[in-house]
Image 1 (cartoon, rainbow, N blue to C red):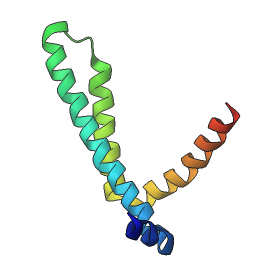
Image 2 (cartoon, rainbow, N blue to C red):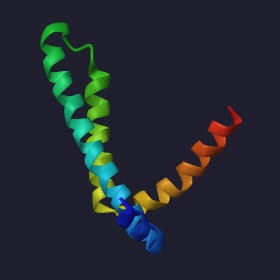
Image 3 (tube, rainbow, N blue to C red):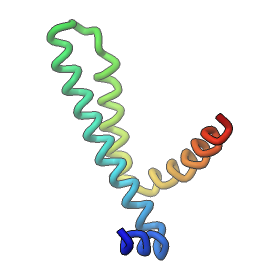
Image 4 (cartoon, rainbow, N blue to C red):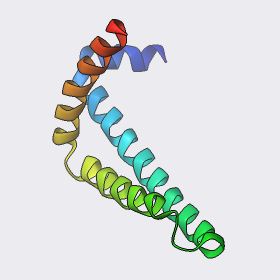
Length: 91
């Protein structure tokens, strides 16, 4: 962890790129699990949990976008992180 921290200080672009890649992988996994949840629940409840399917599709698309275009993911993180921090401090 010490070496990882030093690498993050020396070259923050690599650290941010790794963070975007990790979020992309996690988003794809969450999307696939939402789609699987929809398939399992749809059998018992009909066509009700459509929100799970839509969110799963959007999650998979977002994860692929983060992996395919990491610079766009960095820009999004650079804008959303300060907005989240400011709103958290205000609340």
